[in-house]
Length: 380
Image (cartoon, rainbow, N blue to C red; front, side):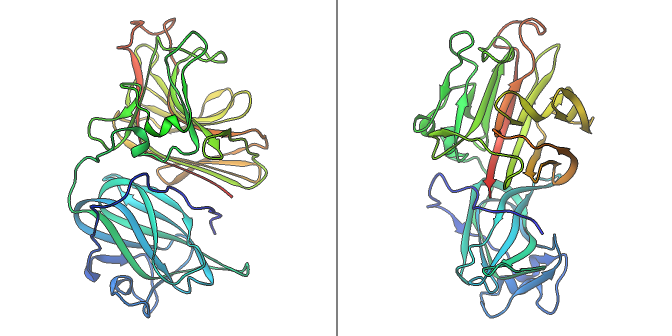
């Protein structure tokens, strides 16, 4: 059973224009069910349910065409005594991407809303990992009495004007590739809530992702020779730096992003990482067309794919618990790293592994860039 914990992404803007786009019973399928069939989840009755047994049992809703989805409402069977452990995923056109990884509250049998940055997709699914009861026991059944899908009727970019309109940046700070030598500009809360800096940290042209860009001639930190436009995990609404142990609790990062531009000569960019007080522990790193998970000073520790194409949206995920780091790529576990350190935190963005000594021209036209569509962090 999964060990997911606290609630994830919360909305950064109201869904005033959203409408319910739940499909009919014929468009609802499941990986498994007993007599409680998938159609029961959309019959507007709390006395019927869908039930599928086993870790990873899923319920899929086909929207008929590509729609904008902003939140999903779930009513858990016996939801006032159970907490369903689950993920919400949407189809990118190539793979399933996770936007919510959490559990229901255990306090109600009514609908609960799970919000996330708007996505465009033709289908969504609920992936269940059983349940825990309020008394502490567990079970393998996944049961929902009702599901509602909410969003817009068709495709189209969002209305966000600043990065915080797309990503929940409450517990982050942004480091920019600008400012005095070895003292790059940092943007913290509450300024981060309304901040944008084109082209380094801004909403992309379609309006559906945050663009992170760092040029090879950008400002670097005192501890690195490479520039970055990168989020650093914080806590207490951005007031303090996050710092957690790999041997206590479960710590999860899920990033949905695309690498959109690489620097010349040394085409290498880090899109997400786990860092401790002194150095990176492991990163998701693109080198040309090769995508790696690193381990310490081993940049090629695990080759994930040698055929990455710029602009392809991928899901990178770290789960840290019990002295292990599990790295996932598009939902598949690709490697497990033994690690027991403390003082850890997550980072997300564009950390360019090139500078003016090894990449030409030495100008703002030579850069690395990622587009981040969603970021989720949980600790429990």
